[in-house]
Length: 344
Image (cartoon, rainbow, N blue to C red):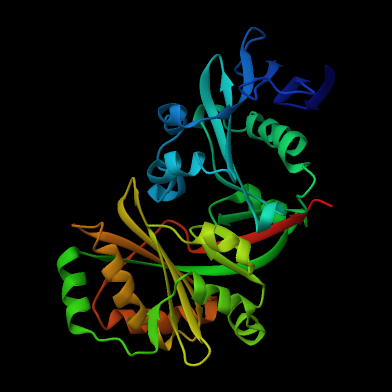
């Protein structure tokens, strides 16, 4: 057993006991002595399973302005082999959580769905969780980089990026709209799409990723985001990008000039649809018709649509969509950032 002492002056003084070989629940015991906690408080970090759903959800509500995807997707995500969840517990109560996704064939670690109980904010518990993951997850042989997607509401990550701890790869503007089932139905029935706009399947995405001209035009950062997860343009990621609740749409012949990635989920705010936009947004309404058809499979009420695009495309997209007289919505954040840190 190896002992390491980690001290942060003022609010944090943790003694961490690291295990060379994790126990069956992948847990780590800590003895805590922090402001608002007693010496007898027992703190540990645990590998989370699908049976911990209620405990993870109890940590905090209204995450990401109520547009948190974790409640809807937790049980499916946590059982997928490339995802692992870790939680910090104090006296058996879940107080912090983070999911780790391995993408790019295991080369990139994406930390996502992070949250800390309001009661324990600023106590260093999430930092301890990060240190644990760095030792037991990030250090695995294939991992070369750590990526995070966050909004402008995350001051901690904004500070780390400005200090150079992470490198900024993408900055995306967020535009929000509300639309109900009836209006979506009317739009999809009355608006026709051209033959050049179509749903993309695995074979199509393989072709896209192999085209240097398409990738250099649509994805100059060599990344595509889907549901707040960045992926490199490699065939290995395609099974992770595609799911029952996702839809990829493309326009162009012979080569694609416009791609959108849509994902449906149910958040605290209700039915939610995230739409990532890449390329020539002149076809945004054609794409929305296909995404509306997809969303109508799940949504029988009002749905919130969050469009994420390049900043200089936002006004053009907004003008196109407003011709349908959709209601604008404040998502609680206006910008999303993709940052990365090299691990080797």
